Length: 366
Length: 250
Image: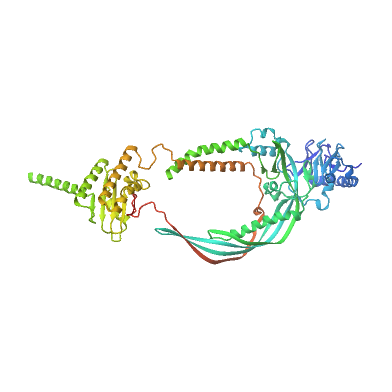
């Protein structure tokens, strides 16, 4: 049976290949041989084509009734089995997985069927931050949080942090925006017995054009939108044409949220920024309030890119806590648990210290 | 030589006499509401109080102020004639035409007879007598009131109505506790908020190509003007002095 997946193994020694962050080449960590990305692509193209055919063949045999009885039909549809070309193990993953790692032999594994047609990304931002960078950044992130439970860091298996390429839609748009603002000029006159404030009210109309480049919106349902927006921004100077070779050694998902669905989030952000730009042009006023606005998209272009993210999900008191690091810039985001006892004691101590100080201030003022 | 010496002695005695005569005029009655004997008795009483507390007390009845502000007029009398007491001075001015009265205290006296508690205490002492036409009784009670307030200050070290040193002000304590609890809750919210840096992005300004921004319609139209007036709060009396006082009608 043909393999339904392709393992990126070194043509020289047979060891797993890895794309090392910050390098332009694919490197074998075992024999030290370096390969150009294009060379690796060429080398594995034929294998990928075969793997596609094998996957299609397997898929045609995939029947819901073949799944175990504990799975629902929906769950069974979402599952796919692939054969590891290195050790022959059957790998099970969901319908969006593009690259993964064999849990038995650790070989980086591609699932080329996921790269087909519309699913193939236009660009990729390669990983720049290593696992050690991610571990160090996460440990640093934990510091300075007064309410962090003392035993949280001891049991949160920082070393299990995983690298993943997350699918993103990049929206380019040229827009025409117009808005009306109510603006006020305040003129204060002070006489011996009263303060007179003259408020002149104006209607300010602004209309203009502007362009936004590559507003990122994640195309993965599994990824929390707030987390994905928090790890922004990305430095697009590192954006390169997509090649599956960059996926070696990393997990990767394909999009499961369409560009059309994602566009609503991009539109909202564009509108807010366009209005802010127009508002900033209403100058020499003391107060400016938006009255109405309209934003029309003149040109809209979408591209599909994979961006690098380090992800760790750990559990504390039976609740999951997820941390992510931008694999390009190193920005860490996450929500930490807090110790309820500390959350009571620290503010209470502050109140106890502040109360007498406030008493003396208030006594002096009364 | 002897003549010169005698002349100098005579001059000193003359100055002392006029000073004593001037000091004797604590009570002046230009409205004719007090008898001569009453004025004499009141002067004697006030001088004793002045000596006992090292203060100056002035009482003045006038027929009319001819449109002058009573606060300004009382301040003028105080600072012209009664502000040289070691422990301060106080003046009571009564305008019989408008049936108004005003008390003025200098800065030192304000520490001992406060506007918030001392002046109302004095008002309670003599206002009913003024209303009843018992002007001698009113001045007598005013002087007694000043005596009592000064004695209170000398005994307790604080003005009448003020807290003793070390005594807790319940209102300030209550306010301090409420504000401290509020700040504690705020600090707790901030500390909990710091545990997460995950938030939705609301704008796309990081991705705006700044050189593409072109604003081609830019119109500001004046609509209308509103005027707001706010009276200034004044901590000093109309005369601009830093002393205190208070008055009313009878």
